[in-house]
Length: 392
Image (tube, rainbow, N blue to C red; front, side, top):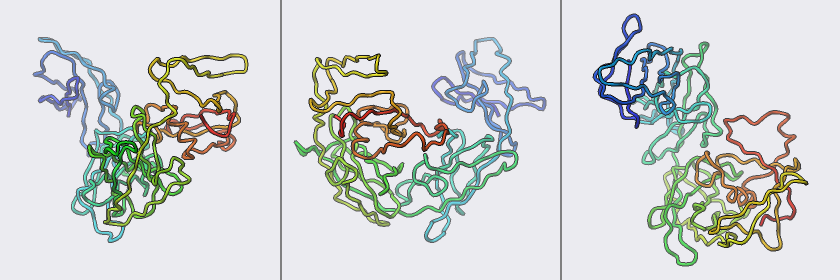
């Protein structure tokens, strides 16, 4: 089967099927630019592909169509594919779970939307055709089911999921899930000065050992939130306002340092309520156009960065930190801790705040045993030469 999409991703109401010799012709298209996808069935054993040689629609080459002309040479070489299949059950009763959505991610943990599945009445699912390679799989139940999102195998963060290999030796990979029924954490986020409810504040949950879960939520227009479902257990909770808000992030109950944070109990089927936050202004950010901050690369070469005339990060008058290329201390910064919840950009002010609060611990480069950091971990390594015991 051949499918056609316009430049904004809308599927066109025309398609075609290849003939015995593999040739095809798609007609009835208005003049314009289009993306073409070869879409074999699961039984045919080949992976879908966009022209020109990509699995991702956004990376596809646009094909021009003009009135009265035939655009030829839009050929496809399809790669072999297999399936990922399994069963999803309740971890307590072992009853099959119907209607659970499955999401597939590539080895860089990019969402692969072209292939998905939903469990049947028996809890069975089959994803395919899945191109040969390594994949990550997530069971994605809706919150009203009472089950938490879970990545294979039994992980609640995609970054720690076990990969599933589909290849010629194992074209039909097996991935079963046992989902735990969970509970919720609920509360309200307010301004510490006006007591007004604060909307759009991100809530992040951590295990007691500070590993972060992917399960998150934001406060509503009144400042109320409800986070979950979370598997039963104990969690640390952080209110993480956007940097532009000028508010300090805070761990429950009212502390900036994770080592002083209070654990919150979560019970199956129960809302643990009253987990409230009062967020105050970040006084370390001062609007002044006159100060500068130096960044030193070597002992003999410095670069001075002049801040914006409207907002400048000003160091404490008694405390200074210099960023330098010394190998003495290395901090490991996962994309998980990006301030705005994505992995595309890392804001330095928030990273320094997390190091100061104890979320990110320094590691010794020797611990890497000469191995490089895999790109899939989205890590940024930088070194800090600590001139004082506290960050400004």
